[in-house]
Amino acid sequence: SPAPPLGRHSARALCVSWQAGGPHLASGGADGSILLHHAPSRTTVQSMALPAVPGRGAVVWSVRLLADARSLLSGDSAGRVTVWDAKHGTVLTTFAEHEADVSCVAVDEDEGVCYAGGLDGKMICLQLHGRALGRAERTGGSAGGAGGVA
Image 1 (cartoon, rainbow, N blue to C red):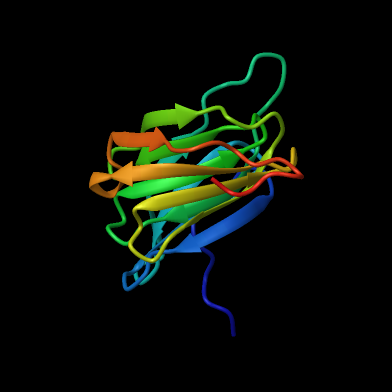
Image 2: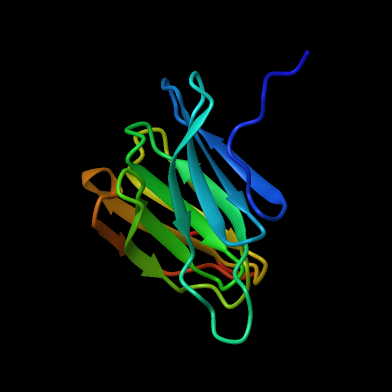
């Protein structure tokens, strides 16, 4: 039989990311929320909400929980990549480089570089310093349909 569910979003859950080598996972929802769960105890240990978008709601399309379980990246329907301090549930920095929804975020093996793809066809590259906490910067250019990846 299935295990009891983890914490619940008030709308559809759209994405999940597992902590590499650890017990946590993050989920993002159509309600603009991000939940950090401790899987063994089946508890939600942190709840975060995307900053409001004037005139419309915000949807979390993609999350990536880093190995330290303190740093989290999200991509949303406002074209933003947000770097979070997941332990405290606070936004550290936001990049609004996309002209449409950010559909996916990924990091390299060392978790030093983030790539974010969007519905606008762009792929942006963000350099993460100190495991993302408070020090991320945009590197290079962004690629459209005919360009290369930065």
